[in-house]
Image 1 (cartoon, rainbow, N blue to C red):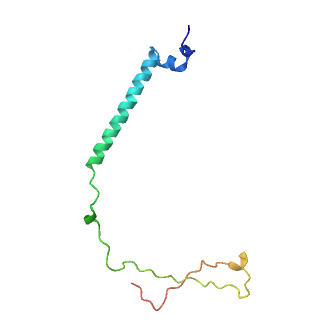
Image 2: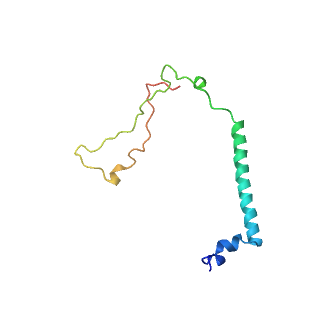
Length: 109
């Protein structure tokens, strides 16, 4: 009575069998496992050497006043025809790309 169900000629039996291929695959598998364990150990050592995260009392404090001042910039004229029609591409010209002169009333820093 044959209970192997045709396993005798399968690829797994051929590769894991007692031959040079089975030995090479076994050594390669052990090498991969050792490499993964070594990489994990080395990563943990590097992590232990890093500075710990700051505690809540070591965090920087927010200032009492605003430190950012937002100013709206002056843009070029956005004038469109009063009759409500849209401008065609040749009527746009350099619309939106013109240089805006600086405000004469505001002194420069």
